Length: 145
Image 1 (cartoon, rainbow, N blue to C red):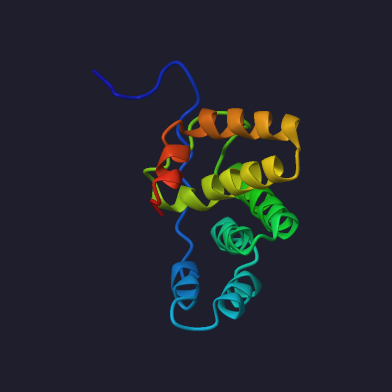
Image 2 (cartoon, rainbow, N blue to C red):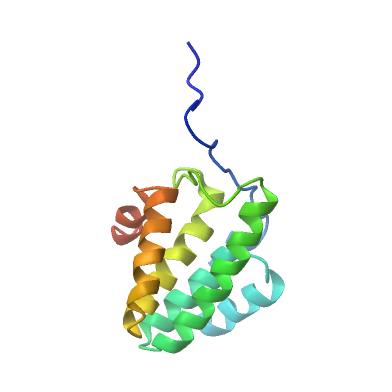
């Protein structure tokens, strides 16, 4: 018997982003803000780079900047998902490491939307994140990256 999902869309699995992880790793031991800005400049289509920048802004109490960075990561993630065959619904598993940038961007955007009182957007993003992978938010909250 096949293990294929016959009832819904197939999982969307994004390709790896060579170099992004290395660029983000430079944030350790160096000027964090400078390294993160360099990462998004070098890899502007990387939702992981934008989500990381959003998280840094959030950690500094910069809620509006976090929202803006996460919004860019979210849109870059939607572009990547569509390019990979996603049609607006279906699983985007957290367990597939290249998907994590998109899921992190969704999470960061939801968190920042809550921070600025965008209640309707929080609901929409929660549904999107849970529909993509219900394990994603708990994994992010537990510190998994």
